[in-house]
Image (cartoon, rainbow, N blue to C red; front, top):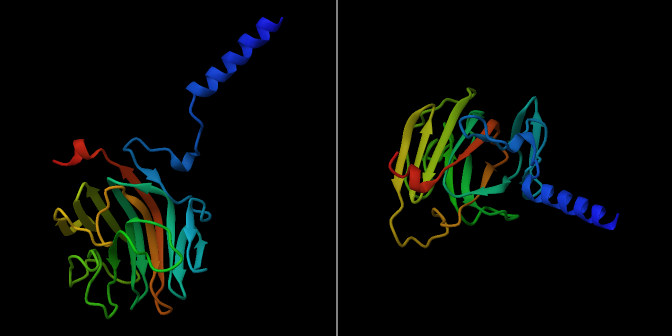
Length: 215
């Protein structure tokens, strides 16, 4: 009898070792490899800094009020990232990648600028502080798609399918504002009290840099 119990216990242990835990439907890749980062209901999988004024309304993340960022818990190195965005006139926002959570302004990673009509001359799709576009490919009060692709030190940004930035980071860059070998989190930005921004359909496709570098 003791032998039977022992064998059963071993069998159960093996089952747990072989079958991976289900991490939730929102984290499963679809047929094209895309993983949803936003469940459309709340900030599960995200962390808000500086007690920011962020909320979820009708499946949309809405940001405004004082400066704040929402950081993804999950981190990625090589990837394609897509989200649909909408800005009110005069708004300034951005999407960071390769960042880390902090309670103040992100200190590492790169920011993809979201700015159609704000006074900052660096417009939507720019890599803020690195390389810039001075005309926006998007319009205020309209949904537009932001698409970011990062493979190794190669970064491309697209707005509504149109390439805005094609940047290869030089070797030896040590500034905090850079592509990071270890990758990092995404962060959505609320820039100032006069800016209102919306995000929906936030998703990422992890990439194998060896397979993707020539694509």
